[in-house]
Amino acid sequence: MAAAEPLNPSDSPEGSEAPKNESVGTVIIAGLANLVIAVAKLLAGLVSGSAAVVSESVHSLADTVTEVFLFVALRRGSRPADEEHPFGYGKESFVWAFIAAVFTFVGGAGFSIYHGIETIIDPRHTGDYLWSYVVLAVSFVAEGTSFLRARRQVEGASRKWGISPFRFLRLTPDTTVKAVYLEDSAALVGLILAAGGLALTQLTGHEMWDGIASIAIGVLLLAVATTLATSNASLLVGRAVPRRVHNQIAADLASIPIVTAVPTLLTMQLGPGDILVAAKVDFDDNARGGEIERASDEAERRLRARYPGIRYVFLDPTHGAAGRNHVDGGVE
Image (cartoon, rainbow, N blue to C red):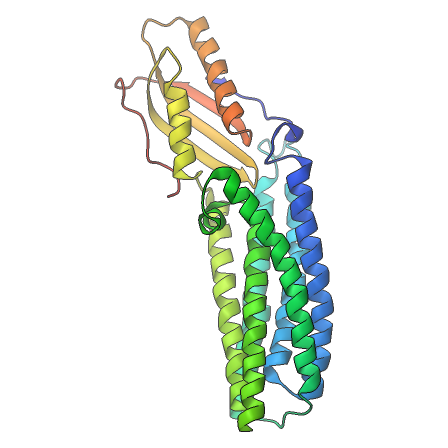
């Protein structure tokens, strides 16, 4: 068996300080923006009596707490491997990101839907509308600034891998940038819903529209929380790499001169920038022990050169049929 030692984080673009700092910056900016916006929305909601604006304040507060969880995820998940956790702490990032998604589900979506239903059943007179419109407009600018930063990060990464931003968001193990991007997108849509509910209430005189807008905001948060929770649960269980990466790894292993087949190839995301590769490899029956060792070292170098995020490589010499390689595995 040939086993690769973990790379130093500075050797890998995925694990280097620059991308990590970029994600930290994205989270901090989003968190500060959400905190200021939450206070402003709450004051405007109390002055106007708007259920949708109050729900938006809870939405922003939930996003603020979520950013705290994501910040903890970045810090805790980046700790180096030790004897107790030989594969590192990368999966802890997924734990905290999952908790953040659950908080959004309970704290944001639950309150917004409940408050909206309460407003429809027991409508209350709405007061001054002006401050609500002002706060919603300012919030849109602030949320838009945070969203643009997250979008630049997503578009830059998707261009690097030659895939669409949507596919990148679906497949990326970087839970922080995915969470910020989706939450900021939901925040912008939520602000439009709140403004629409407020305008319809003002025009018709029926607070029902304000309640409906609050429920719509809750459903929106529910969709975002469910998406993030499902993704993080998959990563916690032990998700494989994307199919294109899987097939390229199989091709690189099969290209080693004395390798005749790669019958089994298993991969796992150990963290946002850490990948484990384990494969059963059929070496030429006439190859000597020294040749197999050198071929294993070469395979390790090739894989790390192509995907620096690969931290561990385990190759198990085994019998197989020539040309029968494990392809089309991983996440599609």
